[in-house]
Image (cartoon, rainbow, N blue to C red):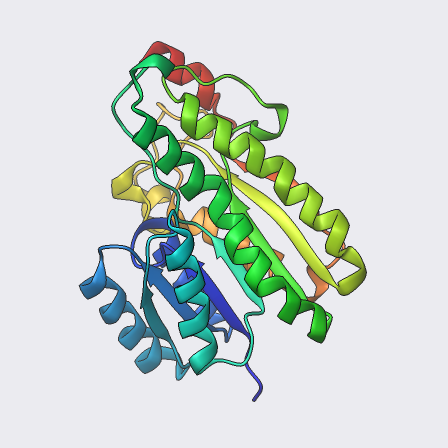
Length: 257
């Protein structure tokens, strides 16, 4: 069987991990990129190898660094002949609430490069191969209403990068449509760390009234949509910004915290 290959940045933990599992279930062989989570990445790759009989590798690299992006792609092509799906899940984030003037130059540059420039680096290196086979899927991750370029208080660098990424994602979709390549952005709602690696069934079991939809969002909610976008018959969906928020006003909540 000629399996397709997916590269998932930040794929060792959280939403990236749930996406890796979902794609492996669908027959994809995986390149699991990680920055610091080596043991988690190696364990996940072996687990997926054993469970699904797919060939999966791990590649260390910080996507905020241009040279690391180049190395990630080179190491990928040493094992696999192509990258059919690029899921840009990794995205630096500073949890401390800071006004724009409180960011250091280094923090600002790191967030912009990791969340925006990294997609340019990886796409530039991977898209030519997708063009040759006339097929490819690029999926980026954003945040609620990123396509409208809203302000996000105390998150200026992250928000600026992701709203720029929304435009970049749509531009890739238009430029590459003739080559059978789609590009879409998935925008998770407020999924807390403890729920990023959990399944929908666990959320349903813990359903309560504090959520607008009645339950907590999970990593599986996001992974299912990403997997759908990689399907052969999802080729008519491109240039889309897809919110997965359970109807929650994520930015409105941020104002109240």
